[in-house]
Image 1 (cartoon, rainbow, N blue to C red):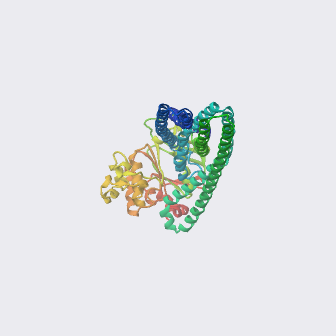
Image 2: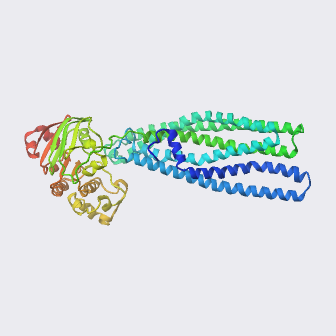
Image 3: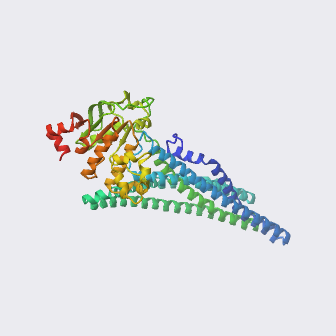
Length: 558
């Protein structure tokens, strides 16, 4: 879906226009079905007047054959109209999911701001489906209108008052149905928001289940989800009540309208203005009109929910990117000189840092937020509010985020693994990386070695195994600048020492920044930089800082 889908209307319009051929085909076929349904009582009225009343067997057979052809045509039309409409619905929802995925995965980021992962999933599934369904219901709405028009023309042929009653009475009835659908639209949007939030909380709790059990926070987590779930249930019940009122009100209006049509037809027949066959046709058409008006009710309800979901989709698609693309160019190959000049971002306050190409440095941040903010600036997940980050003399804020991440690879502490084999998770030429990250031991412990399948997010591995495989993946990328955040918090001290040695050996001559408080990792660095209160307060070798500064010892040795 193009990036011009900025409002709920444009999302719906583009979802429909993208499937216009299938929607048009479905509309034509569905209109043929409803038109054929409307002709059935008309043909029956003709049979009564010309064949039954006239006593002509040949005429009866002829019109019965005509009736059979009409039934065959309307059956064929409905079958293939439903197929085309459902196909358009599924393809539109798929296209919308692709557009949502592209926005969420866009290098500029920003789509996830203020939203839990489960909320994004809900928008990409439930809301996308509801928008796609508009393509399935629209042809039948057009078909219902065709059925009403055919009925009106037939009634005009029978009686001018009956035809005018249908033609003039339908528009205000449709307008009233539209007004009745407004509360349903509002409550459907609230229902989707609450449901998405509940999904997000559930996803968040499941992903952190081990941590919750470890700190004994299950009761608090259950209480949080119970409150969220109850709010979602209340919103769903309000939406269900709104839909019930909507359907009931539209059905009542439709029933009154059809009763009026039947009453007028009966009066005309009793006065001799129309024949018996015309009366049968008029009553049959009045009964048939219930079907298109029920379709109108259904279409109106689906459109109300589709508009609400389209609004949520549009909000996501128009979320501004955290960083914008630029026209700056990093050298190829990059040497890896990194320099931060008076960088302020989040908890960082005027950070000055110069890292020569090929140096292995450690960054110790007592405040975890400062570490996270530093990673965001280095990987261009966010641009500094003040100051500049340069790589090889080029301001990163002027470089396309994709190119930045080809040169500067940030391996976050909570990096996830993907479903697939261990080798597929690490990437090409993994042997050296596996050894350096001590992930070769992980492979040896698995039944099929590096060919062992890892489940989604690496849940089939322990915490330490996941960390080692994620580190091996980062090392295998062989980026000019590698930024690693706390890669050994879940491994034992012996393994940590081995990782430190292997990492230093494998990354020799390549710029590497270790954001960590691990003594084993800091001991192999060329120098250590200490961040305190968002600023660089001191730097030196790990041994010297541990010997001279009590605050440093308290941070890394406690």
